[in-house]
Image (tube, rainbow, N blue to C red):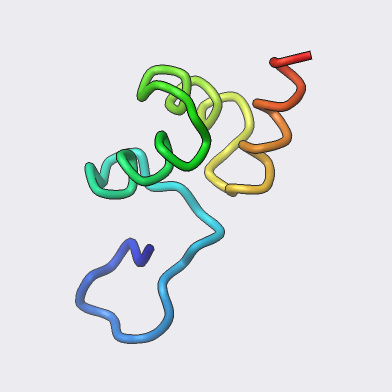
Length: 61
């Protein structure tokens, strides 16, 4: 999803904006985690979705 709603173009689906409630809801549902878990993962791994997924996979092992 685009971080800047004034810019037209394709959404930035590769990044997670934890300050956007819609994105947080979508990512928590998609990844099957709580908001707190998502925030910890973004803090630890960065805001790139692939890195967050990898981080969460590592935590589940």
